[in-house]
Length: 307
Image (cartoon, rainbow, N blue to C red):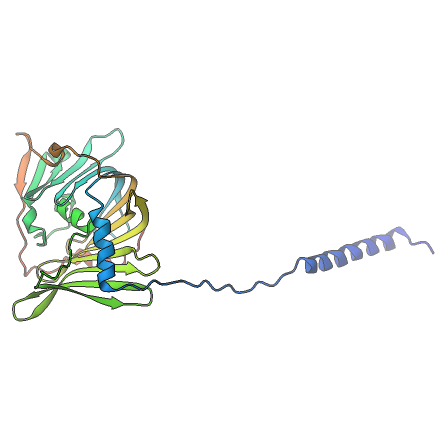
């Protein structure tokens, strides 16, 4: 018996359907839930401090090109520019901000004695004492670029506080979380009161520093620093993404490094600043300890890390 054309067509598509359904079953496989096991390292307080101090001792100077993002009170909104950064330990830093085909936006310089923040467009230079690096700014209005202290950027990037047995007033203790070590550095003042000095967060997979908090002389948080993307730099490692949050001033500074060179010889003149006669020099003082935190910081802690 011969089949007509319509019957052949029905049989053809039926076979195609069976093949496709059966063919899919040939390639069908079961997706098994894969558990990723994270191996956390064990380390004592002495071992963690040894690792941090050793890495810092390998960095004598730094030369870097980077992107600088400045935020003054509006979460997530950064004004970005190119930058050049020079650091010579222990006290010297020079940070220049500029845009392509445009003049310098700002120049910040600090050494062991003084710091300068120069704004060429305003023909103003703000000068203060580096020794006041643990004092918070006295400003009632919104923060602006002249409120940035270059030596505070240096303190945020470099973990210089070393704990030794000879430091009778300064102690360290360790908090242990499932995925993090927290090194608390405190100082004894007055009648046995302990004030926080630094808090260092070390993740437990690779034992790298991912967060760093600095406090002022009255125990108030002055810098909250986040580190990401640690890369080898010679024998040391250095983070290529750094977010510095300044809750008292209501500002954030984001540094995205593009090129880093360590331990290059630097010209001492790079860390000196001499304003011309046409520049208005403004002396920056210290704050009144009784001043409240700015209102502009109310949304500060809601800001998320952005690159």
